[in-house]
Image 1: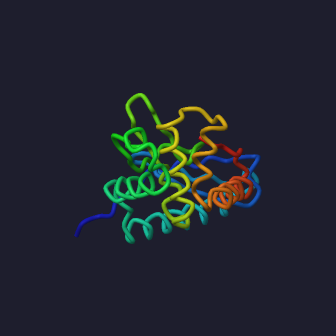
Image 2: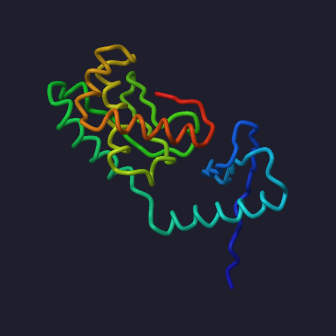
Length: 177
């Protein structure tokens, strides 16, 4: 009988967190973020609960990098059509190591990374994050020209509000990139 290997779990307590708990994979380990005031029993309960949630998400199957790249191509074509070459990334992929950002872009090598923390968020929020990073291929800064490009996405303000709400609920600072 094959044994099921439990992942290494790192629990991080935060004085800023009040009620929310989150977890993410960082390579072979799972990081669980909990409020500092949780008891050891609450910590064990939440670690088990978050491991179950991550396993359930794995069962549903992650969205693939190929799907993500195709989605980025559709968004670039639809909202950045005036910049066909500039808004074409060399790579777009999900990553599990971005805990302070929803996504990031390196214009020099035209690579885009999207945090897997948003994988279960509504599609219109994921589309906003992708488009935000695509816009950085055209305008690397957060200048007014950049925000004009991002505003082509009709749900941009709604998505930004959603992400700000997620940050507020978890006690995280609001981050654009």
